[in-house]
Amino acid sequence: MRRLTLALLLAAAPLGIAPVAAEQVDIFGRPLELFLPDGYCLLDAAQPNEKMLLDITTANNQGSNHLVAYFVPCNDLAAYRAGAITSMTEYGILFVPLVGGSFQPTPEGRAATLQQVAASLPGIDAAVLAEVERQAQSSQGGVKIDGVQFLGVLGQDDSALYAGLLLDVSDGQQTLAAAAVVGMTVLRDVTLTANLYRPYRSNADIVALTSELAPYMAALVAANP
Image (cartoon, rainbow, N blue to C red; front, side):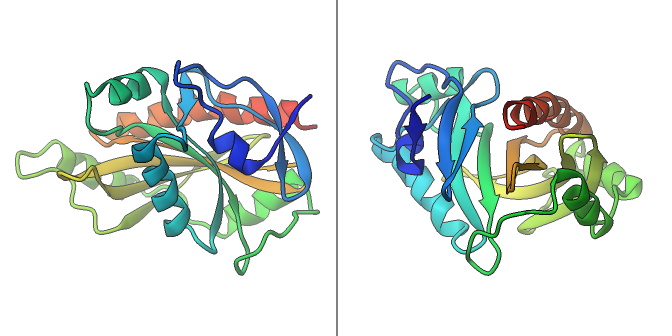
């Protein structure tokens, strides 16, 4: 199978808006089979506005996360390119976490690594979730997020560990509260996080993102034994 470099992966989305099939991607010298969740398409680095999003994401994660892919629902990307919408508020990102600014392999394996990470993080606080939802459904401006609010570990299965976040996201015109679910896994000896984002309206968004992410993480693990 053809091997893609990071730069080729980020530029691989054709203007015809087509999902990316599984490809062997070189991640710090390690070949991994990567693909996008169903219904998502890659941003195209040849498009100025999309390149700007890629550049901003890379800069914001300098030294902490290595950007592998930035993807959005294919229908949204088509509408964005056609000028029908001015921002894409649902999207996903694949990162490889860095340690001290550098890639570090994860020789301990998936199960031991996820167990160790889970033990270091707090679980979901039901009271916090209830208050966040109350704010979102109030008539006084919705949820107020200052940067990033970690909601806790949502769960764990054989493939990944799942955590919830709320964060403020600007579309250039307004700042919105976004829900994010992060799935962390280990593919061979590479730790990878898959992050899905959408505007936060209620806790149902967190449940929906987790439900969408879990089968994707399982498929990534199955493709990289």
